[in-house]
Length: 365
Image 1 (tube, helix red, strand yellow):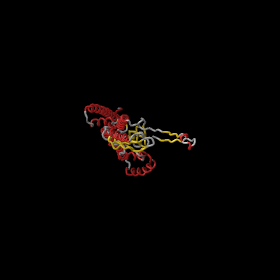
Image 2 (tube, helix red, strand yellow):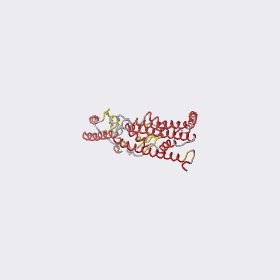
Image 3 (cartoon, helix red, strand yellow):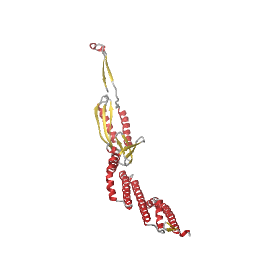
Image 4 (cartoon, one colour):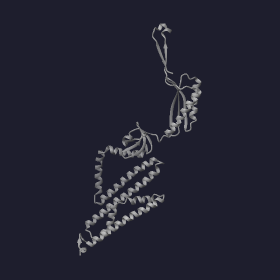
């Protein structure tokens, strides 16, 4: 009978039995995967824990090719295989298990760090930035270990390979100096934390909010809306002004009054400015002084601190101060100075010895 005929060391019956076992196992594994994923997804929606969400994420990362190789193992037990073929099948299964294990571990690491980053983003943006870098480093280490285990399983001498990679790494490092410089600059930014995601910074003439700190570049979102991209190495070599870490804002402003202002009103102007600033909620007065005589005005200078780093808060307080100064000066009859020029002409008829030449004197007041 045809079922008793031998093909590659096994009868047709044996091959059909192995095929049936393989098909049944693969279909069963797919059904089990979908059933568990669906049931756990429903359960995860009703619970506050992250464990069931993690299991669902890992189950969904199980690849079909891994289920195929997993279903193939019991099918092979129904066959009589040559030793080289059996070793090849075992090696393929081990490699598949290593790769699938790496996918599961990478998924679990990304899931956990993603949840922790999301929780800490509002509380501590610095730690969130560090966790995002640890995600990359952790996955790099994980897949490096899996690669070495896979090569060892294939019979390669890992010791000689690591030595060769070390020598080759020196040549690669020399060829990729700029990229590696940006990579180490990225690690420096993450560890030293001169700024983190969400900080408002100024770099030279560019300013914006930090959106992303990558391996090679850092990206800002400017006030006008466009994205500004900096090389990490260039960014570390620049002077960075971090406004998010400003605890309070120092404000200096000046008011000029005319030279015709009497001494009493000039002194009163200083008192008015002092009273106005002291009355502002969220402002702390430092000093108010009659500072100097300028070309066009008697200059009064005020220094105060806004106890909030928020720019809009500063502008609201400064506007309130300006409006109140305008109102109070008007009520007191104190005139604001503005650039003026007074021209004095000397008539030659008033002084015959000066001849017919007219002389002009210019005084700013």
